[in-house]
Length: 162
Image (cartoon, rainbow, N blue to C red):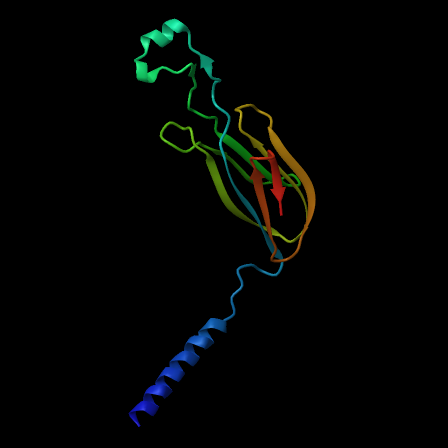
């Protein structure tokens, strides 16, 4: 009798947990919304170019510090802009990581937008200038509850939109 009661309690508990896994229903987006995810890590260009040291400058350095080139570590911030038509969805200046400001700038941003047709533009500047060094424009039809991924590929130096 004790075993039957124990099995009944475990069965009731498992049924309750199973019920909670499907009820109440959960959706992370409304039926008329979509998400654009902007995700990448990119190192800006160096603030100044490497310069070759003269023989006199090399002689002044300790032997273990002698290298032919003096390369500064600091990098430019990365400026990113994402637009849909004329509306700016995201705009930021991302600072380089690291103590010496010599690492990659990283972004992970999810932007909720209405579903439908969008004329998207994404641009990035990594050289400190006013214009975008990399940009991409396209027209996309975003289905309801779709997640559009925008990445930057450092190998090909272009934006990938999936």
